[in-house]
Length: 358
Length: 172
Image 1 (cartoon, each protein chain N blue to C red):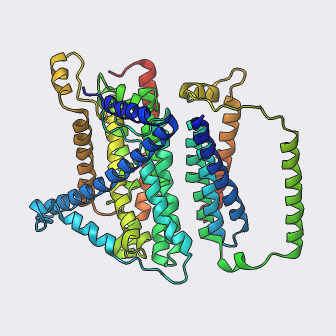
Image 2 (image 1 turned 45 degrees about the vertical axis):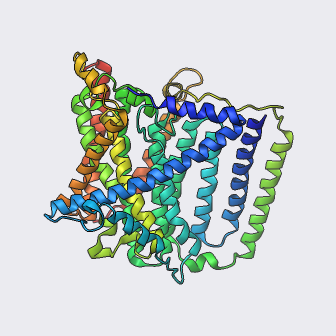
């Protein structure tokens, strides 16, 4: 298994040999920031293309197929169009909050993005409360959405923002509890240690029944948290035009659009990290030959492969299920998922205490 | 040496953010802006905790204050406030009371600042506090552990929740 920390520590040594430690840290921080931002933008482009292709496949269409081979330059053209569009200012609004809101959303999403373990030794932020920090950082996005709805001075935006706030606060409970179930199994919240702990067997197999239940709950709650279909009623276009970002134009709208897609990827990558082993290859205890063959596949490919699968499942939800009503949505969370989740947590604790996992 | 300069720079930046936005939060006339400035103050406070390498408290600060309390504030502002009320000047009696309260606050804070004995050198710890230690301190029953306050707090929250449901439920 190739360890990328060899590369990163080589860069670190190189920088420290030509400048003072403080300057080296500053340069590294700036470099990591630039790399993360670039990765963020590229991931968004790839996801938008994937979404359009998957949507087309589900609706028996071809999707974008004119610009570039297989239509893959279409998203770049769309991006350039978005960047050159005018940002329209609206009268009778709180300009400061109106302009601030998209940045809060994108910063929250970027902070969570920085915690993702991309491969063996490739991780920017690795606190010992990693998973908790990730949930905390992504919960800040709600503030941006509420401010956007309020400062747009538009009733539909405000209704969309309130719906979105209620939805995200509710489903955050399920996300937190289902991840807590897995933290009980792993015994740590540090993301790198969670991945290391799945060296023997991925947690979804190790924790069998409660892990599987937690996985399903996490996927449902994660889809709702990102405001995607079938839970996309904050921006239900037949009722609210476009919800909280109706009044936004140009790149301000682009921020919401990009953040929504990358949030989907973040949800998929947390599912990958916590349940499906992160960058850890598929290891089965006892089959040493098989495990060694699996180790030849690079860790980054494992991570992206599993994340892509999860992203596909989330897209599959969107294009298959009809949209829920707001009361159905809140009923699902508070009356079904939350009690089930609490019970599941109890079962997981019992299984870990009694040692009944694999 | 240069490390110390970098740390000082980060500290003074965070301190400046906290000071400036605290003042702006109380001087602005628009209540939603005040909530947003308060959010920045809480972010910078979380930054201070991360700066001290206490990432657990930093994450709690983000989760509880930025993710919870501020959203609660914004929700209640959106549900209750009207712009007219917030823009009208304050009554003179309230103004005098506010003046009195702020003078009292200044006296208290300056008393604490002047009488406090500062350590000559304070080094932020380089190691993170281990998660297991925090968990055991929070859930333990021995000396210096906090299970009873934790449970009392949860009973208080339960009472608040029951009260909230009682007020919000449909009658009849």
